[in-house]
Length: 380
Image (cartoon, rainbow, N blue to C red):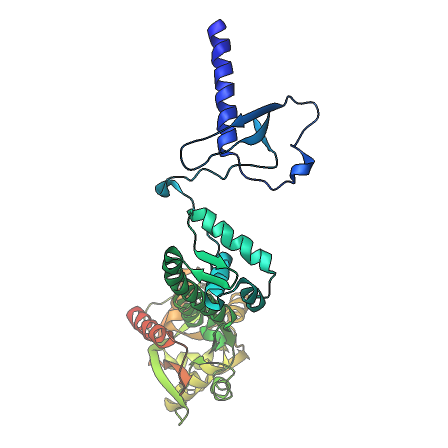
């Protein structure tokens, strides 16, 4: 027990001495005397160091192991260079550079629009941080020391690079996001439209991609007036300002409920059979099928005209009527369990185009268009 008691006293004394040697400096008028706290034990120590760096008596008061600083405190003991943490502020560097450029603390304060004491404190903190003097002060102003010249040369490039980086980042933040607007007919929205939309969104995450549905006969006008940037259309309308590329060509097929009498045979359905059954068709598919059938002397009977795949699907399921769809749509709907399809003989062919205005597109869009065309061709 006696040994433990002595060990505790020695440890306490060691802590007190260490706190006195490395206590942080706090400004306090000497007239106020040392800091005191009610209800605590006070120790007064007077320590002199003679290692060549610090010498002189300082009064330091220790309260329960914590340091209460009096009026005069020693400077912090410098750490080895490799162990230092240097939280050097850009503001301090800017003040230092301005003082060096103007040769005066007062003129630097005017340039920076701050009080002169604030500049002095920042530069003093910077010098204490490194344990070096960067400026030689005199009544005529301030000049760089050798170490100050070294800091000036490095800091000038650092600040210039930082300012350029800040300006570039601000330009990126303030730059409006590019918009890429797609126009698609309702019969292509769920398949081609969604695929193109997803490819553009994935390849160009910094752009806003929008998709609008519209009838094929109106979509070229949207391109001309700048309402959209790209369209998927059943028609191509080459002009001096518009250009189109073929996406795919595929046959039209007859689609209906699985219990539809015309779907009980796997052999191709004669085109003339369409003249004897009620049909639900979209505007574009009606024009295509009517024109094709007329060339073969067949007049089809369209009972309902609906420009929506989802609405057509519901009407077909409810009424038992049939429709004529492109093979890709009919196959997708059949795989989803919404009905069955049968090929036509002869079969009208649906051509699908992607159109754009003859003006530069946002960067990366043309690459996405090429990838989209390859993906569609691989499916057919």
